[in-house]
Length: 390
Image (cartoon, rainbow, N blue to C red):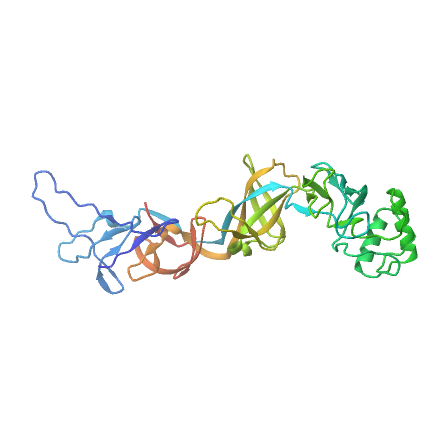
């Protein structure tokens, strides 16, 4: 006996047969057996599910057979729809100012020696430092913030050449210093501009710049936390900074790395309710997060840090959020509700197509499942009516 069953949404194939109700004989009359309407599928007389709710119909053609109104068709229907089907994945994130970056000392007293000295001044947590601002002081020597992409990795003076020279000259020009050409050559004119800059900052006029004098970052920073106090030895970790714009930090499992593409759109469920649109602005390198739970069998995990920026004008408090990424997308496909699927005894899936007063089982190939619908291909067309559980 062949058997077909409806698939419950989100549960995969499962049995959902409902036995057809037995007919009761009139009161006082001798009971009599009524024959149910038979059906032939694939040229074989036997059992087949007819109607939503997966009603089991028994074959039994013969003289005197009477039609059973209860088995006339599905109790509910749906329409085959053409649409773009989108699968989404939601993960937790934290709304703040983005990933915190450690900033430290690269030498004492401007000698670039790589350590030593005493921290003599620190900014406040939450302070914003822009181009030309002081991030901290060691032995009263300030480390000044410059904007760019190339770290200050060497001393720059007359006759130095390279992209880092151009970057320094671009910053001097942005701060209002003139008298030199912005290019890749550190000339005597560049040195004079550096001396003016140093004089304005109350520093010794050397005409050269080293790693202890400046810190290069992509943009203005916000002081996130202080790692040391004033009076502590200068170290590689003095404070941490973030960006100045509100951002969401998400640690994606390494297996979900493909969900995050810079420039990709996401939706965000905000603290306290409401939602907002966001854009993926940064995807970092994988990092290991140590498990500190102490639970048996616990292990470290590898995650990918992702930064999401909210749309301009979004008002939201800092806190936990849920970020929804697009995991997969199928444009312009035929879909039916998942509940319309029938698990076929011979394997695979089908749907019950309703045509006028009759129905037929059509085998389908399933694709993407999303939002209670499923992509299907087979002998179907947009607008066809299919049976559903009642």
